Length: 278
Image (cartoon, rainbow, N blue to C red; front, side, top):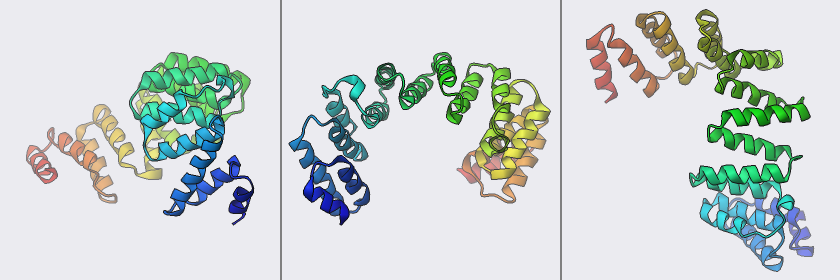
């Protein structure tokens, strides 16, 4: 009721329109909220905040071409365009599999608003999507000098060091993370992969197992089974998967891996397993 009272006084008030849209997600109220945004934009067509909010409505309706058409026609000075504008345009390009346009748009945002950390994160992300890991690492390290206490930048640096095969540097960065972060399942998985890449199988397997014990995820189980098969024996990998299946649901991809491993040990059982999968 308060939001409606505000909009009755000022129907173009951005924050109230945004809250109105957020809170009214069920039809017909959702449609009425969208109509209020459209009406406000009709009254003030150059309002970049309202344009971005209208683009958000279109984006959530998966009308990515309409978002791109709307936002690329905006004449507002580049440095005055809000974060929402850029996020919607970049993500719309990404949804349309237009990686080059997404990258160039993120670059334009980054260069026009060099003090905006969200812009720098977006450009780094798009460089990673386009496998430009060296340049992404360079920008990440530049931002870390300006923002040394931002954990997301530290995490990105670690990942990008690994992507550029600087495994020792990645491990150093990883070891600088807070202890509680280092003990999380995804970080332990990453540590295990780093150690395996450096040929440190025993330590890597231990980190992978610690990660697996926290979540029992089939993805971690698959990676661990593959590592065991390559560094120990296929029989060891089969036993590991069978132990996993004794307590966890039978994931299709992990079952396929299990059947492939059985080919080396028990072809008949492997054939039966493949038949079951089919």
